[in-house]
Amino acid sequence: MKTLLLIRHAKSSWNDPDMDDFDRPLNKRGKQNAPEMAARLLIKGKVPQLIIASPAKRTRSTARIMAREWKYPKEAILLEEELYLCYASTFLKVITNKIDDDFDVVAIFAHNPGITDFANYLTEEIRIDNVPTAGIFAIEADTDSWKDFDRASKKFLFFDYPKQEVV
Image (cartoon, rainbow, N blue to C red; front, side, top):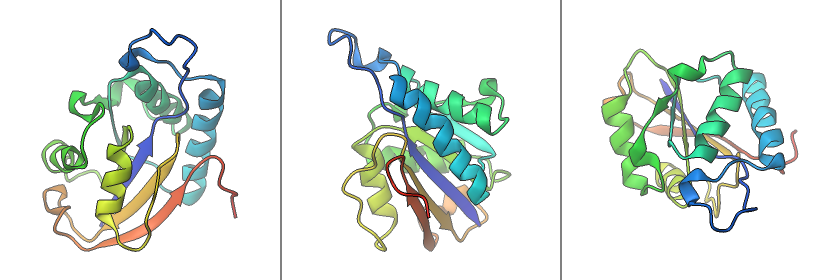
């Protein structure tokens, strides 16, 4: 079994409207939500063995903050340029070409609308209108190889985000 965690970057700052989108940092709320969501994954027992992230500043920062909570070395985070504002199909390309089968739980940090589109592609159990900032979508695939991820039967695990009440 392989578990995929799709994680949208935490809330970013819009204080400088002239700043390039790629360079936008996290705002105060984003810096608070990221460790909170990482702690929720610890409670669920779904800590990634591999982290792949878009290199945009807000996404890289979210991945680093969460990695710190999981005791995951920030220098081991794999930055993938093609995840910056990508289409849903790009996620499959990254999954099948970049992930070694030794990893059973993988987190991909990326952006909307691609992350919401890809989450909806993966399951018919729920329909997600929007993966909010710092939101986490988890799915399990019945396969031993990431190369077979797309064809494998999948089971929706959970969808969690900062404003969702924890039960």
